[in-house]
Amino acid sequence: KLRLFEKVMSQELAFFDSEPTGNLMSRITADTVEMSENISFVFRFSIEAVVRIGGVAGYMFFSSWRLALLTCTVIPANSLMNRYYADWMHRNAKRSQDALADSNATAQEALSAVQTVKAFAKE
Image (cartoon, rainbow, N blue to C red):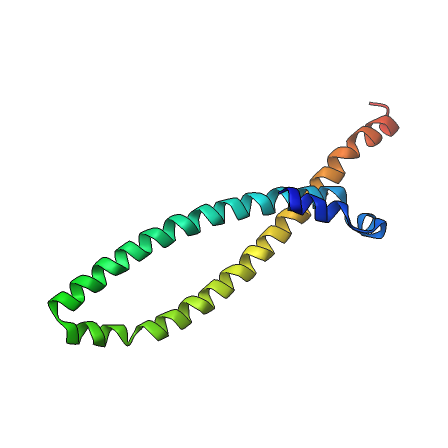
């Protein structure tokens, strides 16, 4: 989170003119939360998957090594499908984060302008 903040703060002034503050705040918050959730999920899932695959593979080769080798021929096709699915998920997650950042920026701009609007309306 600190490195992300340092990168944002090192941008040129023109960057801050073109990007609303709410958008930047939303992106920093959403991106760091998303990264922390993804990292913990990946570590937990990876360890669980390695143990499960190792156990199943060991049992398959113990039971019938010929059928186990036949089953292993599916691995390349499965890996390819997983890669396409991961790319699709990444694109959708990015779109979702962009939409969240835009909506948060709009909400912050609207809420920060409430005082000005009420002052002019003499409420």
